[in-house]
Image (cartoon, rainbow, N blue to C red; front, side, top):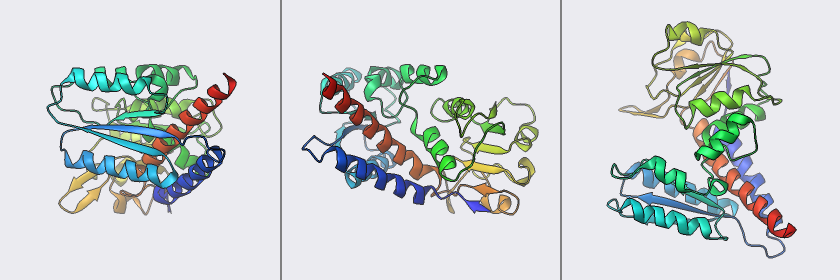
Length: 290
């Protein structure tokens, strides 16, 4: 079985991005910049923000962490986003989720300039993905596609099954898998909580993508021999982190699989850096043409 090592691939991507930034700033041009907005004291969110900030610093992205009180009013957050939208020295804006209950997350994400939406969650970018137009793509699905590409797994004409229909992973991933591109062009089935006979649907997959948030829910009875399994799930259990797949149970029968941790997670962060650098390079190109 091939272990799809997202951690190792993410390190390679970071090295490539670092070189691109070094080349772009060699003439004194400002480096790329990202502002991460975080509300409250949620421990997991603080860990995510710290990891993203450190990753930015490692490759040469200027990362600004904007920490706001959990009781911050929605209009204050929206005003902060509006200010960042106008700042020409800020390439990317990221609002760390989840937000406190009194804040409408959809409204705040909608307020971000789509050209600075490095998370790829804005409806305009979602629409561009649906129509096959250029735009910023969600980091986790983009990381999955990049991981498969770097391991030279082509999905041309293959059967792909996605379990989970979230706007962050499942839906955009299904669209990316079906795109008419060299490493995509799959025949895609999107499954969810109301899917009849999920086991039979999963058994048809050449490539099975799991994003349901249920620890070790998928075992060998769901997976055909020789399939490739991409496990997006990160579940905290008394025995530590695990994915949606039972890794040990699947190991003898699958062709390749991502570990948890160390699979999709590092690729997600790498794609956040990629998106930020992409916006920065486009901004420099626009400025040069002006």
